[in-house]
Length: 72
Length: 399
Ligand code: HEM
Ligand code: SF4
Image (cartoon, rainbow over all chains, first blue to last red; front, side, top):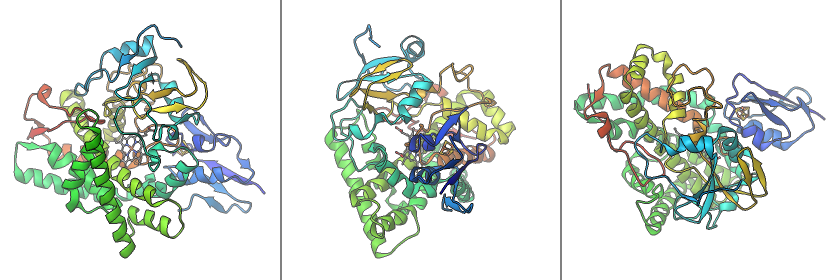
């Protein structure tokens, strides 16, 4: 199973939350976050990051493109 | 890095209004990692440059949890407690943070904007009715964020006098004894426990109600964590913003061209708020201390395992390597990645809320009183001392 991570770099404010919660999954490039890899093995840290992002800039999708996080 | 100096006594004097000690500008260039002797607990590193400050704030090798119950170098006599979100590392930190993250997203905060504008309007109606001179701190800067956070959390406004007094107590550095500070904290905890108990009798949809449900239905936090979280949100949620409203207004009065620019173009307010966040100081210390869990090589030098480090946000925001003409207040700055709300897992949960409140406050004030001016000479505005945050004690204005 793979999940997909999308980061909306235009709404990211570079808080460094996601990169600190899941350093293997997110990286700050030019003060904005991006996914290290868009397709990842299921990993709760990725959900935590999406749930914690103040801008709701991170969306995690499952196999069928359903949104796993964040909850709205 | 080895220092040639004896540790310098920190802080470098009481805050001098909105000025930083001139020594900082020199140290930033010549000694970007300074050995300082803290008021309590011994010596620490004070890290001054942007990149290193970011690293200390966000790198998991620097721990807040390691300060719990430990006599670490610090600003205040009391020790940090393991029930506070500010003293947790992941995964405990993440567990707590996720419980409130939803309530403070940019989207949820925008929903509160019209209500915040209404609160500002009502307060300014009262100011106008009272007639000049009026103290803007008591009549506007304080009640605006207090009303907002009380409504969000579900804290009765009627109890304001009590929690304001206790809040002053827990943010004291030199102005109170350890016993007095502990007494203030205990009063706040008891008070918050009472509000929690009320929600068990009659559930509510406010943030405190959400936390009570997270505890009672899902056991996602302990009772002590729940009560502490309520207190942290209440205090962090108004002291910071209230003081910054006062500081921003004081800063604008000192710089007529900036004030005129905002009056001429209210569309400039969001950028102006970011720039004032960058440059107008709030904290009077170097920030919360962190402990290195292993040796870490910063750009400025080596921090050894077990050493205490403070990441100085005010200095990072003036680092010429990141900000062109760093000491200049420039409302048209293109790139402004200031660190006033911190960085990493502890990045201020109220950042979006504070931004919105500051924008609303400045916009409403300038719109209502186009001829607003200080009723005393600008250099006679008195600022608080002996507290972790600084702000004007009073801002007498006329119009
Ligand atoms: C201008 C206003 C504000 C400033 C400058 C500010 C600044 C900060 C900073 C720098 C931190 C991180 C501290 C560290 O990592 O050592 C922080 C954390 C925090 N702030 Fe704010 N803050 C402001 C307003 C608010 C508001 C309105 C709230 C209300 C909810 C709030 C609640 C918190 C909380 C709960 C934390 C701890 C977060 C955590 O540990 O995960 N702050 N703030
Ligand atoms: S948590 Fe959100 S706002 Fe913060 S850096 Fe990550 S994507 Fe950007």
